[in-house]
Image (cartoon, rainbow, N blue to C red; front, top):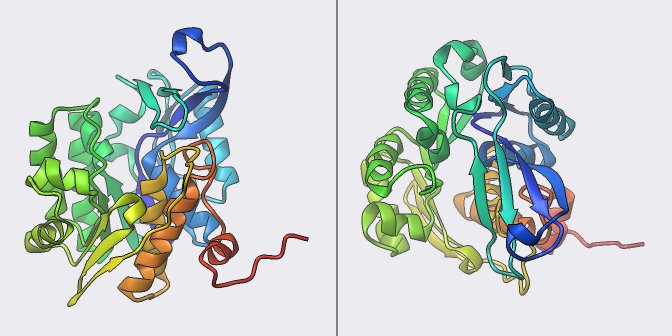
Length: 315
């Protein structure tokens, strides 16, 4: 397995029109989860990846597993909880602004993941283990599990990829800062955003953010800068890489996950850090072209056409 990731995926209800939810009557159903987003994006780029979680013994859980399996991701280690339910997420949309999100995930099946739910040999089989700060925020149990799994992965020479993914609807910044920075010390590759630099390190300067995480022990830091692109540092290299401007993004949720997937795809293909950053920018930008958290992730051919590496033929 090239990459394995784990964390909560919820059923997403996306409104078919804009405005406050009290006036909305029709929704489209999809899935939402940072870790499954990365897995799906990497599978579309041609990689052998696995994702696991704990899902409720309900139709929502079966739906999530079916969708992710259908995207070519291995879900053979998903665990079913016969007591707790699958989490839900509703979006509230206003024109081209970032959507509001409403979680119904407290005491969900995924918030109860323990080490007993995890196939350790499966973790050991992977080149990269990708984790996010969302799993750290779900519960003390998931937090303890994540740290232990990372310890095991590191002992078996897996690269650790970490996206802070701060969600202040799940915990307060004081607690988040302490736990996330502790996790960052264990990671080989870190994907902070400039806003997360401000929250965690009191700076939005990409260079300072990069230095801080390298000093904690990371080998590579890719600072996400939205439409401005990214700043990459590590292994004696550092570079600002220009991004792609999308005039009217359909949905920005999932762009950061697409960025991480693009970068990790480059790592798995032994690209230079600069090439990894360029691919990451392109996948992240393309994610915003489509409504939904993961629907916009491209295939390798589509992203190469978007980047101008291959010629697009429409008919």
